[in-house]
Length: 292
Image (cartoon, rainbow, N blue to C red; front, top):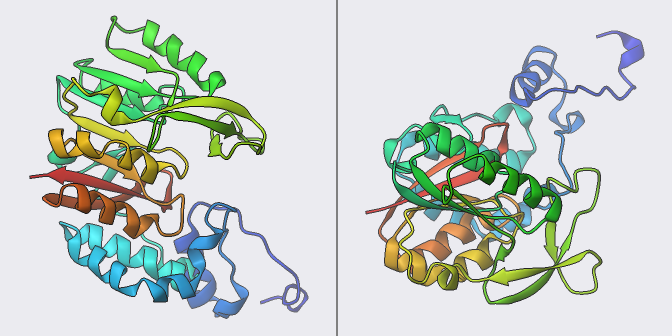
């Protein structure tokens, strides 16, 4: 309320955007037009109201498709924030217990499962799955970025042979190659599959259908920086054949929120859908598919 602060920009660095938003808007009476949520370059396109208006029917379908009230309430908050950019509307899903861990037993891998980890990074997800399962799983870990793959191989060497199977490639819609680019300071963490000539390194693309043609798959995790739709298309036969439980990152592209579940439904319609978020940020939506 100090008069000298009324015309100055104020930066609040916090993960608690919802709580801080309520303090600013409700307690201090700051107009919403003067409150700006942090928006990364990746998420910038999510806040186009024209896109949300155009796909209102898809959003209503999605809200009616989820299997529990917590998923619906969480997705409603995601849509409200995208529409209004009001940080006070953000909310967490109380059923999210950790990384790829939703509070429903059907959404988690089980002991003895064959797990396909697309976007394995340095093996952090593989390690967590194995710790939860007492090492009783076989994880085929796809990671094309060399710096990450070296650490993934080191992790694999620390487990009995066949527990973690590193695969230096990316999942795609068709067999071939792609250009892997890694802009910015977080290059080793967030590489992107780009087009030829965009600079970067060439990596192999394989269809999940081909990689696991004679191997039943129980669980699939996918977080591949916007290539999820292509990977799902390349795994359509696998999904229809094995109906594996899946957790898919559904936020890299603005329309992933509804296009990914629409695509999965076109492959195999009999599933229960749960919606959670990355354990670190509520903006990163993760969808869990449990086939019946």
